[in-house]
Image 1: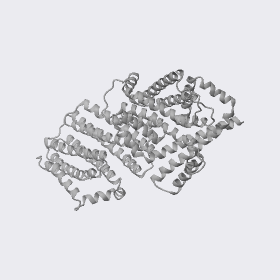
Image 2: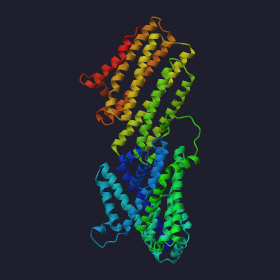
Image 3: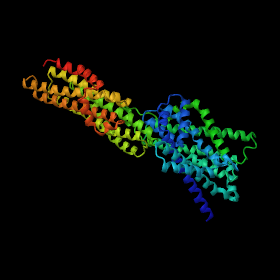
Image 4: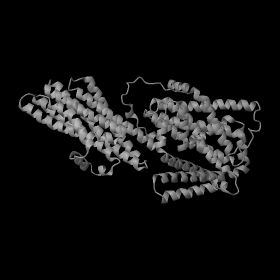
Length: 599
């Protein structure tokens, strides 16, 4: 019965340790979301920079697995390339040692004074008290992040103390000491045990924490500890390799292979070095010395740091090895790879996921504009290959729109800040507007096909008019994309004057085309197509206006609460000089040339 209670207490402590790490990591991610995004999103090709990035990000989110999974998601999104991902993986291995150093606070010995506050049995309740006060009584983004960090810290150490208390009786167990002696004589078995247990627990930090808790018994020597730490490092890459291999692109799978190769080569090299030193009689007092939490944290750090230093110069070879194992398929170049960027792994960091999603939606808008441009060319001369390209990317746009909407709904459950919530609202409403613009491209293509099959043509004046209004719609689409890319209200405000001019152009062209039809200067069938095309061009401009209003209203509640009133005010303005100047310029650019066409 005593053994069962000990196991229950040990597992309960482990559960609290893992949960504490999880919520402390959540707090750190929330408090440094933008910094985390910048670390990963602006990474250069420098391997050392990547290594430091992986180290810092893992130190922030307290999980090398989460860092690597997030990196895999960014590789799949096209934001990072394979070489950058490899350098982050190397840094993540070093960053994971931070947790072990936090645990070394267990070894602080102080009978009084300030230092005694840092003993875990004092520090844990202090952290929990601070955390719960911040969580319950102080509102705000910063205080919420700080409360999660404090609560996680307190829970982590409470779990660690439970584990330590659970294993304390083992110091007097002959069976336990005999088992440890057996492991000490067989380093390979120690490596295998560390590997298997880490795969089961799914956390190298937790396994090192268990080792540190067991070291409190005083029955563990260095000869036992060092192979288990190497096995723990191998175990953590098994999990990430499995994650990297599921539903990801080639480079993501290669990242998992590099992680395995990196840790395996490091373990083999270090094992050889340690065996040679031991056989040569080097550091005779080291091998049988009692291991404590500090020596465990020190060896883990030295092992990961030395492995990185040795293998960083060979990162290119590791990349080549992974490419040799996971070969490229001969495939057509994808014009819009970002449309396949939304990977659930990105949810490990909602801020990064939101940034990737925004980039993908901007690419969606570019693809829609390109499709509109292609379809307008169909009126000049119908091309079957152009039709195939339009259809292919229309399918891609529809699939992405469904996927992005689902992704956004899931992501909305994870964001914490008002700013991110507003961003999600903007993107959620942008998707159907952009998808509709893509639909207009297929409408234009169908109209052009109808004219081609019926051997119809627009009149010469109608062709010139159609070319001018088509260019104005492509221009408003360009402005819409630019405003999304720069998140610029200033650029967004340039859209409505052009949209107003397009409305005026459509009204003018409908009147002129009706006159042409009445005078018999245009075929009735082609005339009906022309009228339908004008309607869709006007609607495409309307979608751009909708998106511009969303961008302007994102940080302006007055606009967001009543878009219609804002538009009415703009159209009736006599005081908004920038609006009036843009309106005047656009009229000169598009309306004046239309008026000069003789029909």
